[in-house]
Length: 79
Image 1: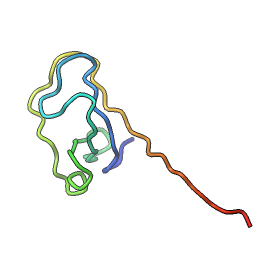
Image 2: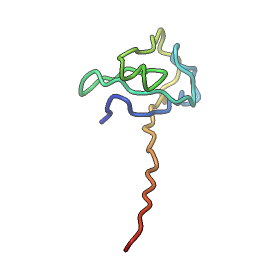
Image 3: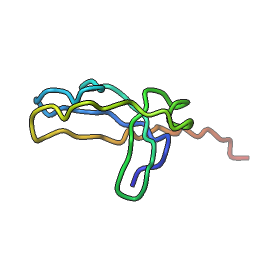
C-alpha cells in the first residue's frame, strides 16, 4: 500500500486528465485510510495534509497512479 509522502506519477491512460492533476506529473500521497489516498503537489503539502482538489473524473478507463521507487546508493569501505 501507499504511505503519506510516497512519490507517485499520475497517468491518464490516453483519456483526459482528472481535473486538478496533469498526466505524467509527480505527486505525493496523503494516506487517508487503507483504501483511500489524496494527492498533494509537494512533499511538504503531503506531510501537512494539504491535498489537491480534484474537480472532475476525466474520461477514459485506464487512469493509473504509479509508485516511484527511490534509488538508494550505499557506499562503504571494507577494512
